[in-house]
Every structure is written in structure tokens, then in C-alpha cells.
Image (cartoon, one colour):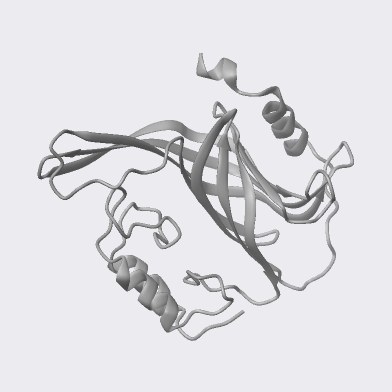
Length: 246
């Protein structure tokens, strides 16, 4: 039944972009992209979430997204009755196309495109009294999909909206919060999106250290590796890039 709900626009988008005519650049300059956005919809359903992408044009990309159809509740330390909620997580496992200013075969220009193979999971969190567990189930296993960033459909402002369209999945869409295009590699770890990795980013992660979905302090933007916990790995990611700017 869910497959029947997948919008025709997503299917058209996927087939159009995968079969698109690409204009290859002859420039030897390396180009790097960093982009983040808020998830606003999951198919026709309003949604909440976060997407992050790092890429080197014509070479590689890392894209991860987490979203839910209701806000994550704040769970008390010892809930009297079970608290259960669901998140969805998608991540790119292999990129086949990584392009800026991508022209498809309908002459539509997309600001940014990543096509490749994706995994998608349904993650259920369960808090009951003093116990906690989460269960991850695959929704898409190595399925083809595309991630595109487009101009505003009304006024043409570039880098305004994104769409993540993966086989057998409702399209995930939302506004772009921040993006940078540079000729030097952009470091990971800029939590507050001020184009540098400094003590403010370390402090942001440290303040949320130990937090998980459902607990105070958890923030998808601070969960840098999308493993549903703010821990030493997130601090290490920031520390590796400490004092770098872009």
C-alpha cells in the first residue's frame, strides 16, 4: 500500500535525472560542497528532521538524513508508561554522479545533484521505566536514489529546496539552511555553521554529551555521524578539524 503512495513526481524525477544529459566540465579545479537542510515533508506528510551533505564534485559524496513525522518527545528519566517513537534514517553508501549545475533531459537545471545507492532504516525507540532500547529495521537495502538541490520554484533563488528520492520510499523534501562551495576541502565539525571549527563547536557537543533521542540535549545537528547518540565520536570529528575555516 505504501508503494502506491509514492508520488508520480518522485518517479519522474528519478528516471529523468538518472537518464539525464550531463555537461562535463573540462576544469581541473577541485570543487567541494557542504550543505545542510531541514526536512519538512515525507511524501504528503509534514515531517521534522535534518539532512547533511559533504561532496567533492565528480568524485565522492557523503549524505545522511534523519526524519520523523512527529517531533521527538522529551522522555522523563523514569517514565511511568512506555514511550515509543519512530525515526527514519537514510544514508548514501555509494555515489555514481556528483554534479553542480546539472542539466537534465528536460532542460531543468539543478543546483546540485548526487545519484547513487542508498540504505534506509526504520528505527524504533522504546523507553520503559529504567530500560531503553532501539530497534533498526531496513526499509531500503542498497536501492537507487537521487538527492537534488533546486532553486526556489517561484522566484528562482538558487540553493533553496532539496529533494531526496529513493526507490520505494516517499520523497523527502525541505528547505536548505546553509551551503558552501569551495576549492578547498570543507572540514566536518562546524556545528553552528559559522564557516569555522572552533571552541564554540566543541562546547556545543560537550553540552549535549551523552544525549540520545528522547533525552534533553539531543540535537540531530550535533549528532555528526547519525548514530543517535552524542558521544566521543562526535567530539573527535570536531577535534580533528579544530581551528580550520572555509
